[in-house]
Length: 143
Image (cartoon, rainbow, N blue to C red):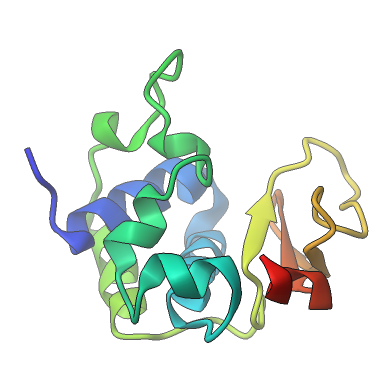
C-alpha cells in the first residue's frame, strides 16, 4: 500500500517521537520540514524542491523506516489524531523555534548531548525531551 505524504509523516512522528509529548513530536517534524526546505547540501538534492516522501524514505536516515530486524517501524504504527495534526502542521511548512534550523536529531541514550552530530555536519542546538537536535555546520554544505 502506498501511503500519502501525510500518512507517512504521521507514522514517522509517532515512531520516532511518540513518547516525547507534543513538543518532542513537533521538534522531530520540524527537522523533516527543515530538510525539505534547506536550499543546499544533500537534503536539498534529495527533496528536489519540496518532496516530503523523498526525505522521509531517504535510505539510512530514520531508524523507523528500517524494516529488517526492526519491528518498530513506520509500517507497524497506528497514528492517532495528534500525529495527524502535527503532520498537517508540518506539511503546511511550520517549524518550532525550539530546534531552529536543525537538520539532524538522535537519542543518545545519555543525559548529555554530544557537541557534534556524529559525522561533524551538525552542532548541538538544543535538547528536547530525550532527543538532541543539531544545526548544520559549514561542513554540511559540502554534502
